Amino acid sequence: MQDNSRRILTNQTGPHRDLLKRVVRALEHPLRKPVAEHNLAAFREAQQWLARQDRPLILDAGCGVGLSTRALARRFPDRAVIGIDRSANRLSRRHGDLPDNVLLVRADLVDFWRLALDAGWGPQRHYLLYPNPYPKAAHLKQRWHGHPVFPALLALSGRLELRSNWRLYLEEFALAAARAGSGTAEVQPFVPQDEYLTPFERKYHQSGQALWRLVLDLPRRARYDER
Image 1 (spheres, rainbow, N blue to C red):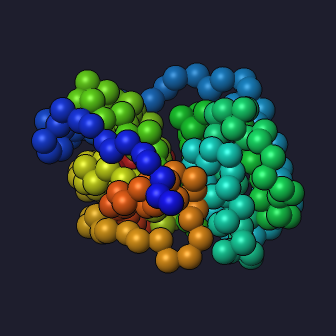
Image 2: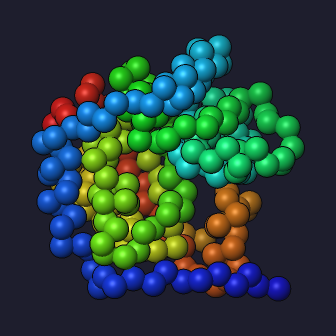
C-alpha cells in the first residue's frame, strides 16, 4: 500500500530572482541577533556531552522525532551524533532507547549553529533532511539558503548533505553556496537503498515522489563572515 503525500506547490518556475541578493546581504551583514538563554543552556549541555564522547561529530539538523539521528548512529557507531530540533513535542516521542553515541537537543538551529561555530565545532558530517521548503516565493527568507544564518551554516564545514522532494530547494541551495564561496555541487536524484532516514523520506518515496540529494564538502572557516 502506497502512502499518499502532497507534492510541492510553488509559484516559482526557477531559482528565486532575489536569492543571490539575499546571500550577499547575509555575507556583508552577519547575523547579530542575541542568543536566547534556553538555546545557550542547551548548547552548553551538548558541549559537555560531546567532550565526554571524544569522537568525531555528526550533526542532524532539524531531526524531528529523532529517527534519523538513531539511524545515523547505527550507520556510524564510531561517531558522536547530535540531533537538534526546536520542538519539545517531537523530541519527546518514544522511539526506543537512545544509543550511547546519540544526544537529542531541543534548540533553535539559528542559535545552535552560531554557538557551534563560535565554539570551534567542525562536524565531520552535517545533515539537513527534508527541511520545510517554504515553497511560496514570498517565503524565500525562511529557507535556510535565504536566511541570514546561512553563512554560519556553511562555515561549520564538513560534508553537508541535504535531501528533499523539491529539487528547486536544493538547486537554490547549491547556487547560494557557490555564491558564498563554498564550492559547487550538482543536485542528484536519490533512491533509498536500505532503511529510510526519516518518516518524510519513507512517505515521499512510497508515494512515488522523486527524491533529490545535494552533497557539499565545505571548507573550514574560522568565522562566518570570513570569505
